[in-house]
Length: 292
Image (cartoon, rainbow, N blue to C red; front, side):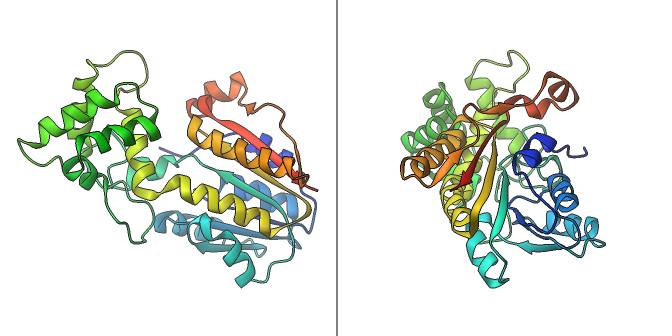
């Protein structure tokens, strides 16, 4: 499945880039946003593109082989400030975060992100060291801790019921695949109802826990802020409430300190036409600020 960038023009337009500006795409993915950013700044500008996934870096390197203004680095965006300093970038005028996972990573990583595939239950992003995997969580953690993770990071009302079902299931053997996990969750929730798979929120919660996504987001936002020049802008595309609350809290904190102007009084959402063309856009929300 080919990845389609969400809120492509909306996100790039709100960054208000000019020729020769310096910008950062903190989540390169397949390069959709990055290509439009590169076009905006022209060949005399500078665009740093980050991604922690090796396959994404390969795709990005190939896609931007003829773009001299694009620099590509393999790292988690929590290190955005360090990379900018290492490369001696000029004051950055725009930073874009797209917090959604790319279709390629979900469908082709082989790490258990998709509940539609039978893959090892890892859910690890990038090639860095992880303290644990999703397999560790569902097979070794206490029932209450599993429930807390699923409820807190997945906002799943049936978290306790799902955690109980997982603990019961693992007594008969280790839970080692994404498809097995999906079946257990589906059974705990009483089967499928509607368009959204019943395991969606549980998979989200485990992925967030394994990769410390919320910690990385907080560090990445602060790093982007510190790399930003006066008048520079940050835009963030979120896909669920937990991310959105962190981003809105960051914006409000900077505004309270008199350091920024919030550019999005309300979250910007995809148009009906975009949602019809790309169903992933349904849950996307865009937030942005400008540094005073």
